[in-house]
Length: 170
Image 1 (cartoon, rainbow, N blue to C red):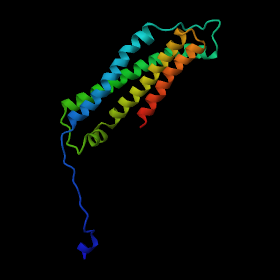
Image 2 (image 1 turned 180 degrees about the vertical axis):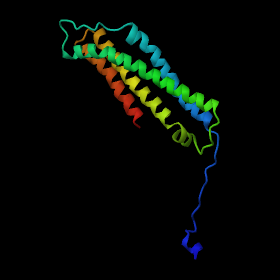
Image 3 (image 1 turned 45 degrees about the vertical axis):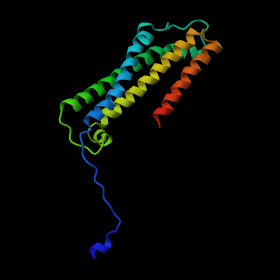
Image 4 (image 1 turned 90 degrees about the vertical axis):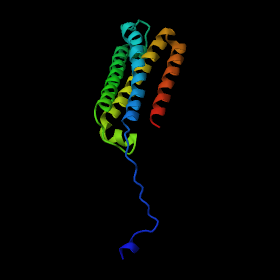
């Protein structure tokens, strides 16, 4: 009676366990390199060569907002990218230096043992990218002497930010 209760065509596939630590380390390294590049770009763009923070007499509300948020966005972008690099570096070190249990896939390994580092690496990378684009938008606006041309150039930068976010949300 028990054989009749089970479906006849039911096949259970067991995934083979394997060492996916090198693949997981490669994924973390894929995040570490771009975050490092953006961090290096933030120093001259946002920190070493900042905008004049005091508003000009002819600044409108938008220009004043950009000037006031510029140092905040620059510091947030730099710190977020550095945090992303740190999370990824520590995760790669753990994957390399420790004996990681076998897993059925790299996704399973990251989900099981490295969920927080993976989410933190990605979240800080995206937050840093948003701040980086904000800084680029601000600089582009002021370099083009504000006005319609500056707004157009800043709009192009801002549209790239929206495209980046839409790619991440896929």
